[in-house]
Length: 143
Ligand SMILES: C[S@@+](CC[C@H](N)C(=O)[O-])C[C@H]1O[C@@H](n2cnc3c(N)ncnc32)[C@H](O)[C@@H]1O
Picture 1 (cartoon, rainbow, N blue to C red):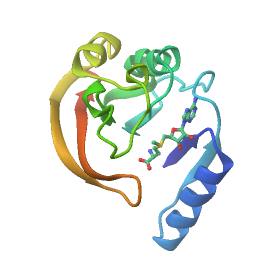
Picture 2: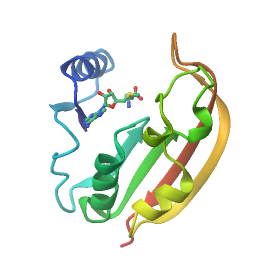
Picture 3: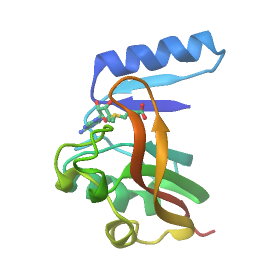
């Protein structure tokens, strides 16, 4: 398993949690703006609240059709524009959020197995507790 994040602090926390829970994890501090996702490399990509500026998000999403192994999957959850103003976490501006329409445009070449937009309780500590407006996708590279 490989975890990629822009921050040393985030990857240090991930490494500590992995050790605590007996999980083998490679951490990579990198900017997704230029991180090479490779070709036929991943069985599963998990993108949870990965809110980046649109050009970075689009670059990563468009790469998945070749970066995933054939039959590999993306599991994604993110806040939608409806989250703005709820005060329960997430990006401060709608440009950093996602919705199904955008994801369907960006995840070119993947087959959607699950797609949903709804409000659910998100309980993730101080600043991130309460109803959250989210989009969820499970999408598979054919083959
Ligand atoms: C809302 S947090 C979610 C973190 C984690 N997925 C979780 O659910 O706990 C968003 C993360 O995206 C990372 N991030 C933002 N822009 C990034 C970029 N350009 N490249 C890599 N990571 C980035 C931030 O450092 C932050 O850790």
